[in-house]
Image 1 (cartoon, rainbow, N blue to C red):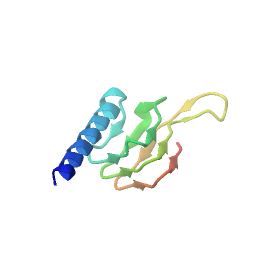
Image 2 (image 1 turned 135 degrees about the horizontal axis):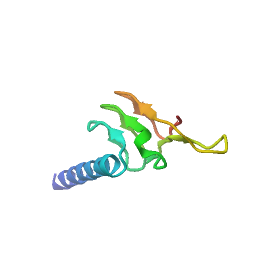
Image 3 (image 1 turned 90 degrees about the horizontal axis):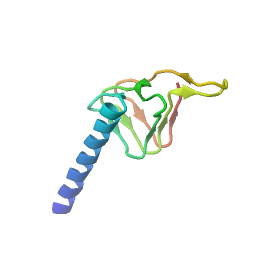
Image 4 (image 1 turned 135 degrees about the vertical axis):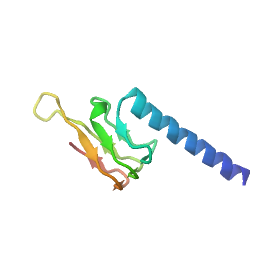
Amino acid sequence: MISKLRTLVKDLFVVKLMHFKLTKMYGMDIHPSALISTKARLDKTNPKGIHIGKDSVITTGVVILTHNYVMGHGVYVDTRIGDNVFLGVNSIVLP
């Protein structure tokens, strides 16, 4: 029982700390009810271009990009993930 409680507290602390880092330090627009795996990779070349809606779940290995270098120069755009969205393992979201 104590082991489960310890794991729960640790997980909640890590999730809250990660949410704080992504929203306050990088300026991403992430709803407080969204769950993001610590193994997800969110583009930090244009962090203010990431918008994640309420009750969305971003699982492990997901990559969210906010830039396009195909044309030879950086084009930065917003990438929006709506409310109640589930992104499965290793999904790639492009702008």
